[in-house]
Amino acid sequence: SAGDVAVSPAISKIEGNGRLFDSMACAVPTVAFDTPVNRESLGDLGVYARRDTADLAARIEEVLSDPGSASRGERMR
Image (cartoon, rainbow, N blue to C red; front, side):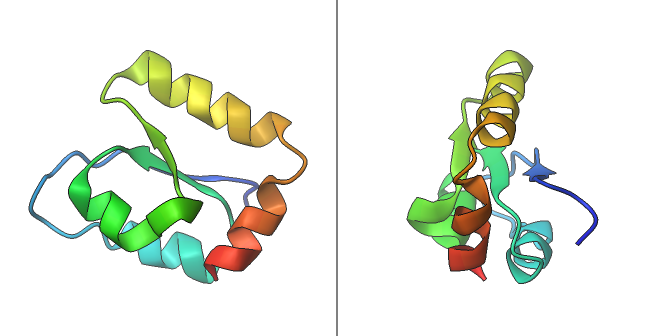
């Protein structure tokens, strides 16, 4: 993978979020909005943001500054 973190800001409550599976396959930690669909795909290994851009940015910063984030991505794979 070419990145350190994947971000998938989709907010649909009923449609699947196919990008999540690409992120999981690349073994990168993934930040997504907190929706049932995203939680079903990522489970406890996802990093979830409230549905606002400020919280999304904060969660991205959190993942980038956490040295253990890479292992989260590996476990997701």
